[in-house]
Length: 569
Ligand code: ADP
Image (cartoon, rainbow, N blue to C red; front, side, top):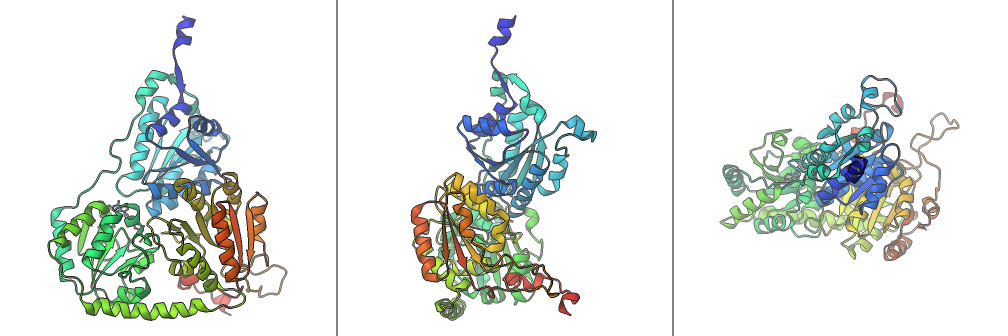
C-alpha cells in the first residue's frame, strides 16, 4: 500500500501555475517576491522561465503591461498579498485604461479568515478590490482548475479590447497536491486567443461612401493601430489613399515621422479644417478634446475603426462605425479604395504642406538656439540627432514639459518603439516601461524623463543594473516639478511644494549600483554622453542640467488646474 502511494507521481499548485503559463508560451514573469509566492518565482526560474524581480510592484506591473502592448501576449506580474497587490493594482488599472493586455497574479491569504474578517497576515479581499480596475477578475480555489483559470485569464486579457486581468491565487491553492497525470490533463492551451473580427460589409461600404465624398479627409492613428500589428496595410492605406495623417503619441513611427503625408507639424490646422476624419484605434477622449469644441473647428464626420462597439458615439456622433479588428477593417478599406478612389485635392494637401513648412521652419529656428544654461529644446535637439541614427531604439518618455517637448521634437521611425504617459497622462511609468521594453525586445532603451517623473520609479535603477539592461535614462534636471524656481510665499523654512534639492546628482544614483553616470550641461556633452551610453550597451544615466526657470506649470495642461483664489491673492 505504502509503495503504491509513493509510486504515484504528484504535482502541486505551484508547478501547475508554471506549467499552465508555459503551456501557453508565456516565458517571462515580472514581479516581487514574498509570502506566499517566493517559491513560485523560484520554480518559474527553475523551469526555464525568466523572472525579473523589481523593487516595487507598480513598476513590475508597468513592465508587464508594456510587454503585453509590444507582443499582443499578456504580460505577467506576480505580487504578494494586500499591499503588494495594491501596488500592482495601480499598474493593472493603468493597463486596462490604455487597453494593454496584462495579468496581475497575486497570492492571497486564507479565504475563511478573510471572509470572516478574522485578521490574517496581509488580510484583504483582493478579488473584490480588483474588480473595478480590471477587465476581468478571477480566483482559482482548486488545483485542478489552474489550467482552465489561467486559460480564462489569458483570453480575457487579449481578446476584444485588451486589458488588465486580475488572478487571485490563495496560498492554500499553491500548496495543494494533485496526481501529476491529472494535473497534466487539466492544462488548457488557448486556441486562437485573438480571433480576427471582420467588419460587416455594409459598414465597410458606408465608410467608403463617406470617404469618397470627403473634401478634406484626415486619418488619425492611435496606439490601438500600433498595437494591432497591421503595419503594412495601414501604411498602404495611408499611401494609396493619399490622405494626410496624424499619429497620436504612441502611434508615432507606425509610419516614419518624416513621412510626406504626416500632418503632425500642422496638427491644429488639420483638426480644425478636416471634414471627414478616419479614427483608427484612437478614442475621442481628453487627448483629442472629446471630438468637439474649438480644437475641432469646422463641422466634421467621423469614421471610427474600433474593436469595442461601445466606444462608438462615446463623445460625439459617429457617422460610419467600423467594428472589428484593425487589421481586417483597414484591409477592407484598402481593398475598397483600390477599386477606385480620388486622392485628396491639391488645395487640401497644399494648404497642409504650407502650414507644415512654416511651423517646421519656426521649430528649426527654436532648436538652433544654444542658450546657457541648456533648455529643453537644445537638449532634445542633441538627443534627436543621436536617436535618428538608431531607429531601432525604444524610447520611453514622461514628465510634464519633458513629455510635451520630446513628443514633438523626437522623431520615431518604427512602430511600437515609443512608450509614454498614455491615456491617463500619468507619471511613474518610466523605469517599469524601460525594463519591460528592454527585456521584451532585447534592444536598447532611452528613457527621457523629467526629474519629477523619474522620482516615482528611480529605485528601479538597481533592477536595471542587476539585470544589466541596456537602458540609458536621461533625467531633465531643472530642480523641481515643472521648474525649480518657486518660492515659499511665507519665507518659511520649507521650500515651495514644487521644488527639489538643488543641483541633485542623479548620475551618482546609478553609480551606486555599478552603472555608468554622466553629468552634462551642454548639448555637445549630451551628444557625446548619449552616443557613449548607447554604444556601451550598459545601464547608464545622464543627469542633464536644464535651466531651472525653463518649464511651465503642468506643461501643456495648465488649463486643467482649477484656479485657486487664495493662490492668486
Ligand atoms: P490613443 O491614446 O493613441 O488615441 P487609445 O488608447 O485612446 O489610443 O485608443 C485605442 C483604441 O484601439 C481603443 O478604443 C481600443 O478598443 C482599440 N483597439 C485596440 N486594439 C485593437 C484591435 N486589435 N483592433 C481594433 N481596435 C483595437
